[in-house]
Image (tube, rainbow, N blue to C red; front, side, top):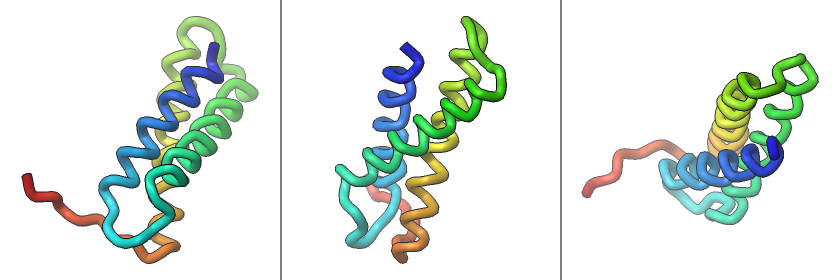
Length: 88
């Protein structure tokens, strides 16, 4: 159950973080995959640190979100993509 939540959180956060950056980066599919990878690693790290059970679901989901953001944002900066404001 945790793994499914981490994958969903990572996919949404990776896609959202990828939409914030400009330039020709890895594309939306790779942004989602990097988000899922960061979320799964962050979630497993928190589970191995002892955060589990009912209350641990929220904590591991938050760390999965942070991990997904970090992986996507850091890879975008390494690739030379920049944050820009979107006009509506």
